[in-house]
Amino acid sequence: MRRALIASALMVVAGLSLRGEILEQILVKVNGEIITKTDLEQRQIQVLRTRNRAVSADDLKNDEALRRTLEEITPQIVVDTVDETLILQQGKERGYRMSDDQFKGILERIRKENRLDSDEAFENAMKQEGLTLPELRTQMERQMIVSRVQSDAVGKVGVSEEEERAYYDQHAGEFTTAASLTLREVLVAVPESTLPGPVGLAQPAVNVAADEEAQQKAEAIRARALAGEDFASIAASESDAASKANGGLIGPLNLDELAPALRPLVEALKPGELTRPVRTARGYQVFKLESLAPATVLPFDQAREQIANKVYGQKRQVEFRKYMTKLRSQAIIEWKNDEIRKMYEAQVAKVATETPSL
Image 1 (cartoon, one colour):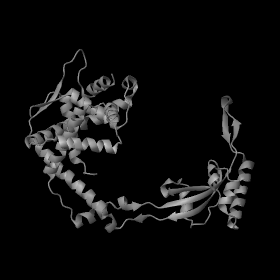
Image 2 (cartoon, helix red, strand yellow):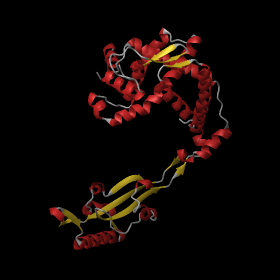
Image 3 (cartoon, one colour):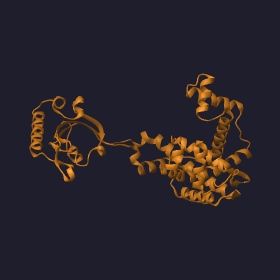
Image 4 (cartoon, one colour):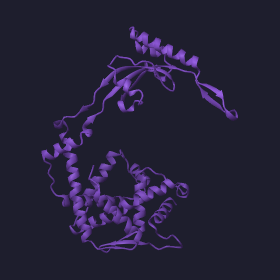
C-alpha cells in the first residue's frame, strides 16, 4: 500500500497520467535499455528511507511537505538513474562482475559489522530492509561495477603542495576551532506581574518595587563575590536559575551562542572577572567568566592529510564529471516522457555549474 502511494505521488510530480489502468510505462531508453516508472519509484522509496521518512496514506493526502520533498529529489534521481545505466553498460562491456567469493566476503563483513551472529538474525535484518539475498547481491554488484568504472574514468589523480596550500588559505575556517568559554551565573528573579487588560485579558506589567529590590540584591551578590566570597557557593545558595545545582556553571559555549546583548559584556572580561548585574527577561543576572579558550587554527603541516583528501576528492569529481559529460554525449537517449526529460536536462545543467565539494 505504502509503495503504491509513493508511486502515485511520484507520477504526479513527474506529470504522468494516473487515469484508468496503466501498463508499465517506459520513461526513457538509454542505448536501448529501458528505464520504467517502477525503476524511478524504487529509487524514490530508497531516498525517502535514507531521510527516515515514514510515508502513509494521510501523508500523501495532507502533507504538502512530502510533495515538496518529491519535487526536490526526483530530478537528481532521474539523473542518477540514467548515469548509472550508462556506467553499468560500460562495466558490462569490460566484463566486470562480482564473483561468488567476493559476495561471500561482503556478507561476512555485513554480519560482523552488524553483529548478526546467526542465520536467523541475518534473515530478520534482510526482511526489515525489504531485501532478498539475490536483490542484495544485485545491489552490491552494481555498486562494485560503478566504483570500478569510476576509478577507470578518473585514473591517477595527483595533488601538489601548491594546491594543498591554496586550499588551506581559501578554507581557513575549516581548520579553525572557535573560541569557547565557561561561565557561572547567579540569577535574581523578578516576579511577574499583570494588570487587567481589555475584555478581561491580563497584561504583563512591571512591579517597580520588586524590580528595584532584585537589582539591589544582585548588586549585593556581586559585591560579596568581589570581596572574595566563592561565586559558586553564592550561586548554589542564592541563584534562582536551574544552574544553581552546578554552582551556576554554564558551558562550554561558543561566543556565537551568547545573546547579542551579553556578548560584548563577556568579551570585555578576563577569567575570574564579573559582569555588572544584567537585566534580562528573567530578572537580574551576574556572570563570572570561569575560563576562555581562544580560537585556534590547525597549522598547515598538521592539517595536510585532511587537505590532501579534500583536494583529491574535488579533483576526482571534476574528472568524473568530464567523463560523464562525454558518456552522455555519446549515448543514444530516447525520452518517452517530456516532463522527465525536462527534469533531467535542468538538473544536469544545474550540477554543471556547481563547485565540486565533499
